[in-house]
Amino acid sequence: MTEGDATQRHPKFATSVFGHESAEREFLQAFNSDRLHHAWLITGPKGIGKATLAWRIAKFLVTAPKAEAGAGLFGEELPQEATSLEVSSENTDVQRVLSGGHAGISVAERTENEKTGKMRSDIVIDDVRKLTSFYTQTSSDGGWRVAIVDAADELNVNAANALLKLLEEPPAKSILLLLAHSPGKLLPTIRSRCRTLKLKALSEESVKAVLVSQFPAMPPEELSALAKLSGGAPGKAIEMADLGGVELYRQIASQLVRLPRLNTPDIHQLATRLAAPKADAEYHLFVEMFLGWLERLVRQTASNMPTEDIMQGESAEMARISSMSRLDSWLDLWEKMGRLVARADAVNLDRKQVIVNLFTSVASLARG
Image 1 (cartoon, helix red, strand yellow):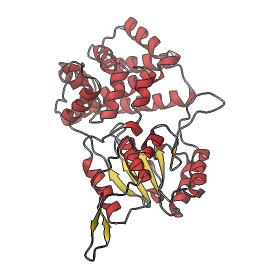
Image 2 (cartoon, one colour; image 1 turned 45 degrees about the vertical axis):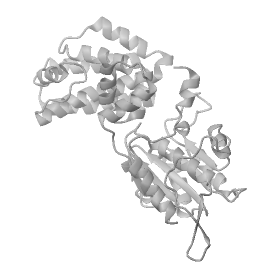
Image 3 (cartoon, one colour; image 1 turned 180 degrees about the vertical axis):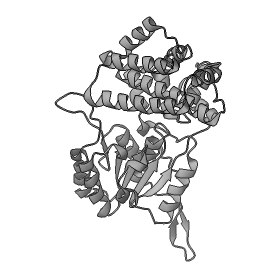
Image 4 (spheres, helix red, strand yellow; image 1 turned 90 degrees about the vertical axis):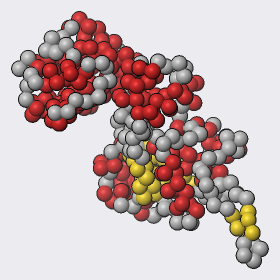
């Protein structure tokens, strides 16, 4: 994928929000009834389409196209209700949004740490202060001012408190769109001041349809694997496809189904590749897939029901492996691995050693 392709995949370029039409209708009903809440919390799993919906709302509001007028009872002109968030890409305001130069939209997100040159793990107070400054400015055309926080559950304590002040004293004709993968992490006072739009996971067939639109030549078996791995989140499925996620999952699963044995040379080769400085995204995808595999094993063991295979024969191998130890031991290992990965990111542990430890820890438990 080229850098240009990646840029065009930004949510602000999306022309539709597949599978979430009911959320759009709910927002439009509020807009048409002139009871538009000043803050909206858009929730759902990562990659489900929250940012896409937020940018569609933003483009709809800042363009504020005047709909065709009809005749009232006494001949006065009455505006027609908006029936869609869709706005023509030829609209001048939309062009400004796409170029990143529209003064009516501001975004708070994780930024680069100037000292380390790496992305911060959370949104800091300076990022929220930019929104405060943005809201104090008067719109030149009297239009809407839209702020997007992507994602609100990444706010640190100080940033969350600063955002709360914005929610308590919202400026006129302004709207705040908060995206949250895990809304339970937000301050209750923030959640209580927002109206929620909850986006649900898409069906496997719907995710496949999105993938086909992006990757027309993708083989059916790869489409199916990505749809299952993504958990119904089309954005995550696309990200996995860009990173070679199916092949990476095959490498993980081919090692795990061998348990309690391991192919140590292959594991070290994989760990060396994923620990490279330029493989940051692939490393985090590996961690997500590895922990996801173990979570599926725990769920299958607890329910005594086979999970759906991503690779052929997986659920049968999971049943064989899970019988090698007790359910509480597998659950404890899964939780410990999650803490290890979080600690590795926090204190910058050697990623190669982390990967090797994940495999050897599972093998050790499987050997009893």
